[in-house]
Image (cartoon, rainbow, N blue to C red; front, side):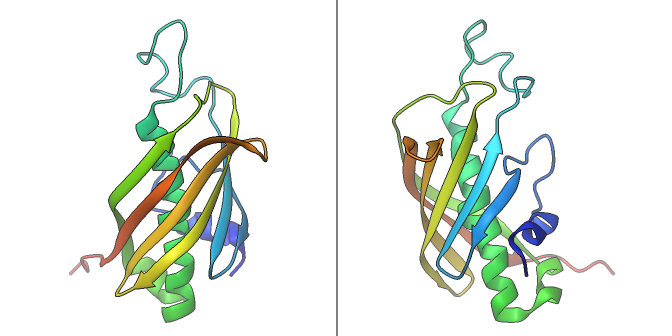
Length: 152
């Protein structure tokens, strides 16, 4: 499965998808990117006149890349393509450090590295950058794969 194909299986959709592309992907690491548009819904009320991207949104973006997208890829490798429509990933926990703000219009690069994947739980170390080397935030995110309820 190619990196861009994983985006077709992400459960998050606009306006709550914070991944534009998956650039690199293998069993151990993932690299994704997102450009925070100036018209994002959360900028209106978050420091009006001088908006910054909320930390919870930065965390969500890192989780969508480092847990959801990577988890879908690992599930695909383990169970095959059919499993991607039977499982979904729920965010379970994180530990984050923030260093710089992300402003409207800025593009971020998100790098994730698998810490472990077992019993459908994935934990990844994630880092977010503006450009290739300007570190914005880093931490650990975790999620759990859950079977979707089957329609009867």
